[in-house]
Image 1: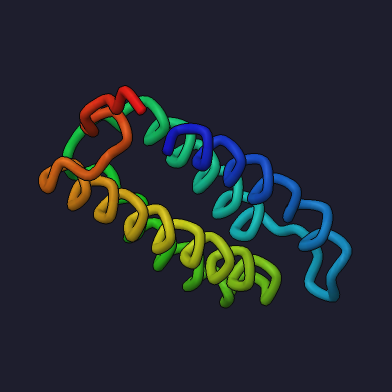
Image 2: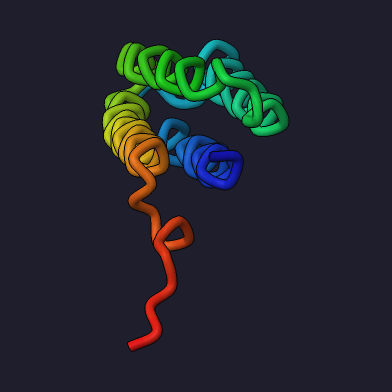
Length: 113
């Protein structure tokens, strides 16, 4: 999950030239939002071992989607990464479910066929 956050930081920072080339240009507010958001994501990458981390990551996507007010591209980035984080949440729950049932490959008995 930390790796996904690092990738998201890169994508958010790559939005800076897109926003600066738009009709409103890069202002203190838009630049501050994008850089501040990237810093928060970078800090969150260090706490991904916590049980609440996934839910904070999903909440951050809501903030990024609200960045549609900054620029439509920022909101679009939020939608894409919200889908990524929802997929991660699903896969995490599925692995946990299989682990509890003993269905993971490492939990299977060895066969001597």
